[in-house]
Length: 335
Image (spheres, rainbow, N blue to C red):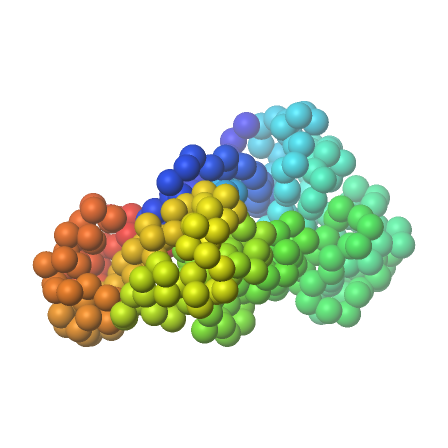
């Protein structure tokens, strides 16, 4: 099977203290020729961000050439999605051998997305009769002739089917976010949309670690209240008794509930949230380190450096210098 695998490097933020089961999901992005591999990077970035936000789900994107290698059997396609990565310039036409290959993928994959001109693949394998799809204006006439019905919007999510469509590669991201809503809930989908720029991020969703913990806790009210209180008090960290009073429970109950729901210890999480904020300030502002230390509740730059080294295995000045010199991706310090 000829394909290219982009494997997710999980977020640099600390994982919970107890080992958590990570479920792996696979997405096969199928292209007509290798020149389309570069544009499919946006799919990889989308699922990389989703892996970061959920924490307990890892998404692997596989790039494949249509018709190359074995399709794979039912076991290979169990739970696996297929994205036919067309564009809005050219109709995707198939040779006889490719037609059989594509037909097998559409029959085996439980979730398929046809992008741009790839929607006309349905006609070539005779699946277009009475089919509704998102059709780009460039292909509207050809689609009508083939028996396809245009849904009139940029994306089409088939409520009772497994073949979905998007008019353009960019609109595909919106459709994939709708899948996230189905799989992980609307709250996670909203967080992801804001994180990758499909919508304006909410103020209380700026922390990847916070989003991950809330998702893991299933939106537990006490966990959400505790996380919000910690985020609002990174400059002058609360004592644990103050924190428990703010959320209306005992110290013991708060610690136990937080650990049971998230797998992370409360005070360790508080420290990680402060360090996450410091990391962000180093990357995206020109504040001196002493001000960043003060803004994140550390008594000095020395204590910030010590905590930063323990958490990220690097120093604050390294993050700051990389901001101006580049190379953060090579060091694995960006998402």
